[in-house]
Image (tube, helix red, strand yellow):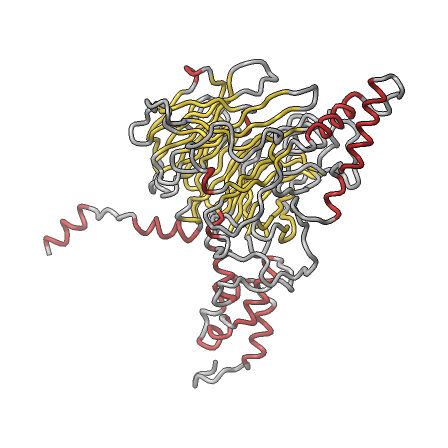
Length: 570
């Protein structure tokens, strides 16, 4: 401006100049004069800065809750928890899992050192309690979950035993006294277990039927097992599901349907891709059900088996394939059909990984990742112990829905509103076919983070990518992820944790460790705080730049004694 306050350059020219600057230079230039300050806050300018800086596709609209492009730029820049503020070194071995209480005041950590530690989440995190599970013949602790009112902690662990042992146990710890209240067997151990209600939890058991055929049973257990009355059940069978080709049920979790109609973030709103996502509904009458052997297929298989038994036919299948076909035949007419879908908000969805093509944990091709409805009358241990509504011929329960990800699932997490399921998957090669269930296809090093809408039963958004894993498919382990209102985070084997924005599908931060990052978790009350756990035996706390500034401002600055003394002498 000249001395009279008249702009020397028109706004349009200043705007064009600012377009060639980066965000920091635009803000610095805005301090020169009022004209530049006004241009530096122009909405069109910050829209261009946003798309260019974050490399978001131009057809992706602004976040529905955003008030301006400038504020949206600032949100992604200033509120992502990417500043390391504390490192916890109390564990002596790999830290495998982290979980927050619903209040956000406490969190728990599980480790290969066979302890579960409970921490106070204050401005400076401190250790509150440590429980050693070695006296109970545990090898290590692997998973924990607080119940809804934060009075009890579920802890899942692995038993000492042979290398190929799959047995584990679930313990319930009181958070008032830290007393061990109950212990429940859990097989395989990577069912992990979860809470269904404040006082009841789900565990698993596995029964071998053949070489590659088995039966998984999910049990509902009372957290308090010291019930004196013999008329009160402390355990009840929920579901019994047939496993084919050496697969088993693993990684059980529960989604609450009550908030499906009021999600924190509607992911498919304004989605640029109008092509329908993958549908995973077992109850449909479409072509997807043709893989299931119908009456004609069952009759043909019966004729083949009769011919083999009578010596009139030569087997055209391997022993394992023949066992699978026989198991499918025996299950015909002995499986309870899926429950009809209901709109009852009291219902819950039981979600777990399984498969029907190969043994490899969490690999799903044609095999399902199961989703079962849990009706209100099933959410208590009261009633018949061995199931309800199953006839004498209905030996197994059918799945209500399936997800086909054509890969190896290594992590799952629910959005806070329980509407969306996020899945870490390492893909199989395109067009791969599983010829032998004991030899699964190779898996990609890149991890795909897939998103599924549990209300519409469709895949939404495109896969999130950035993180990697290197372990081969026969040694794969779980990489835990977590979802907040606006962000999703995951560990990885490349020694980093990652944070993405849920709406824009962009990676916002890489959080460094010295080894594999096994678990990440947001504070449920403050998404600007994230914890990461690693094989380097540390837990790191990360806060957003904005939160760091706020917390530093709260610290009182001590006033020097001599400055006070000098002021008194005047």
